[in-house]
Amino acid sequence: MPQQPASSIETSDRIFTIPNVISFFRLLGVPLFLYLLLGPHHDVAAVIVLAVGGSTDWVDGYVARRMNSVSRLGELLDPFADRLYILATLVGFTIRDVVPWWLTAALLLREAVLGVALLVLRRHGYGPPPVHYVGKTGTFVLLAAFPVILLAKAVPSIDNWAQPIGWGLAWWALGLYWAAGALYLIQAARLLRADRAGPGPSRAVAP
Image: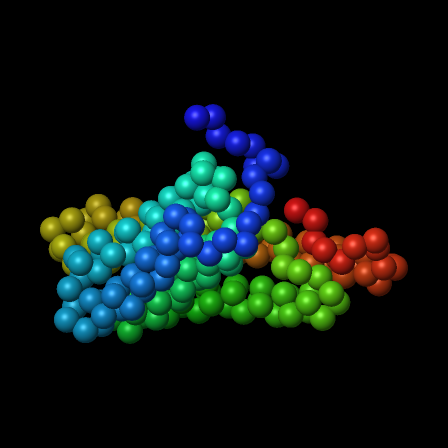
């Protein structure tokens, strides 16, 4: 069956769709991952949970577009699950000394800057800017880096090649994350300048 173009896919109000079920299971994986990482220190099992959670980030979006089952709830759940996985992983990794505190600080600072920008936009009547492919790619790369970094710690025999790969992905993701943040800030600045110049016909953010 040919894939529908994005412009022909309608957003529905349905809750129980296959992509939403996948997102719900992704969310259930967060406490399981933290338990395995911080409780019994079953790092290999934690790697598996983290890898499954990261890979299904792509699966739920693909299924939603392929089956024409894009929903408003799914549009909220998908980025929420991404951020929850990243936040949980950063907290757990920092506690376990898997990653240094500066990496956690750099990623959380980007989220804080964008959070302030979103609050300013909402105050002026605008919604959040559309998700940029640079940010989505950064999230995907970061969710790929985390399992590799943890696997290098869990299996010392592969540390000599797994750690460079994991940290290479992490640095790449960090650069993409901040590049996407800069693009969002530029979008926000343009909207606010247009707002000061005079109200437009619509307050919605154009994709």
